[in-house]
Length: 211
Image 1 (tube, one colour):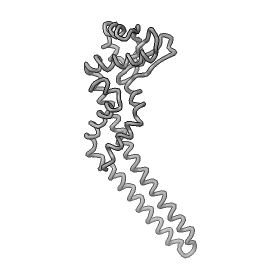
Image 2: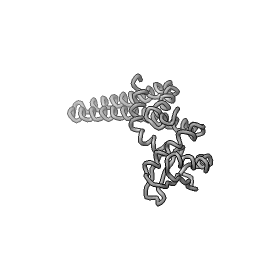
Image 3: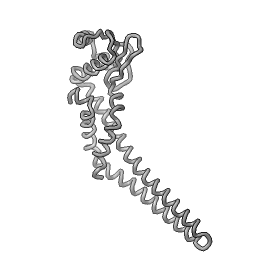
Image 4: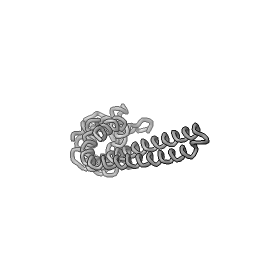
């Protein structure tokens, strides 16, 4: 996985696709269970509706029919909601697995040699200041020494300093102007949040088009 791929929709989709292949065997079971619960709810509702209809048949046919339709309609909605909730749980599971894979990726040399410098460079260029402050997580602060800072400063032509306060993130960086008025969040969490709507559509298609 290259740094360019990692921060693109295609790169994150590749991570998601790996996870989908691992969990696909359980998807049918989860959805079938949800559908069975919905079907049972619907059948129970129809039985209740039938009883109500028969009880009121001789005295209030119109009212009984209305009540019957209301119960069945409510059960159909409940069944659909159950299936949607089951699908959402599967999608959440895949996103959690993606974060776990990213936690492994940030331990690699490629992350420190290519990906993190690229994320820093993007943030620094966005800020457009002669000096910037980097906010990294605790592990990245230990790895990103003065030699790497000087090299990166030279490569992008911006004076870079490292904040002594770690941030809570899986990986990536928050780049800030010295006065704190400008900042650019280029952490993995922020990137995932921005790409989530597109990834959810792509993921739903991958998971459920054949289910």
